[in-house]
Structures are given as C-alpha cells and as structure tokens.
Length: 138
Image (cartoon, rainbow, N blue to C red; front, side, top):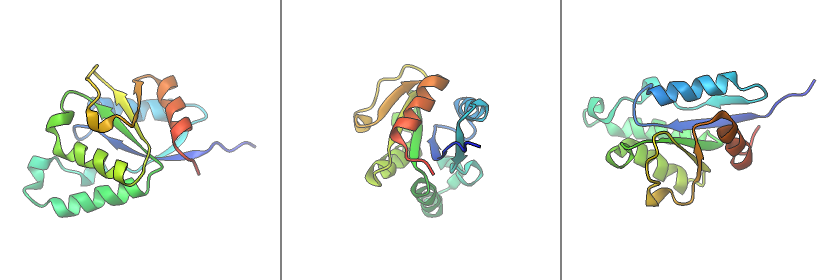
C-alpha cells in the first residue's frame, strides 16, 4: 500500500487560533493524499501583550518548533507589519533556511522582507502544490 509523504509544517499567523488558522487546519485535515504534522504550538504561544515581558521562553519555543519544521506557512494579513511575533517567526525561518509559503488571506501587499517567499492564494490546490514543491517530506 502506498504511503503518502508527511510534511512537518509551522504556521505563522496573527492571532491565537485565528479564523484563517482554523480554516487552514480544516483544509489540511480534509486533504486526501496530504499528510502533515503541525509544529505550531498555539497553547504555548500567548499574544505579545499576554506574555508580559517574558518573551525569552516564548521565542525559544518558536525557534524549536520552526527548526523541527520542513516549511513555514505564513498567513499574511494586514496586521503583519504591526505584529512583532509573526515578523520574528518569518525572520527566524528565513535565517534558518526554511522555505516560506505566504498565503495571502486578505489581498495585503507582500512585504519587502518576504520577497523570497512563495506566494499563493487561500485555496487547497495552490497551498498543497506549494507545500509539495517547496518542502521536503519525510
């Protein structure tokens, strides 16, 4: 029996359990022939305001999760430029040599710092194709 490759994915997004995050997870779970492990530990990543200055452990956790991933999916929206956490995740992933796939959720302009990333629309076909193309699987 054929075994589908498994992709280790880290999802960057603007809010804890955001609507777009939930939609993406639902899309992944319904994808026939698409196996993944999500390394985004939402419970361990409080918003920057809730962290109350204790960012060191949060950043270390993000770094470990990004390092364990084959690729990064960044859910781009208008809050990207204002969100220090998501910009840190994107910068760290790029510095670590991780492929970044930007899923544009609201038609936002692609930020200059993401110019090397692949950009796709929020559709199953485009996202699955980009993951298969840019991420190594296990």
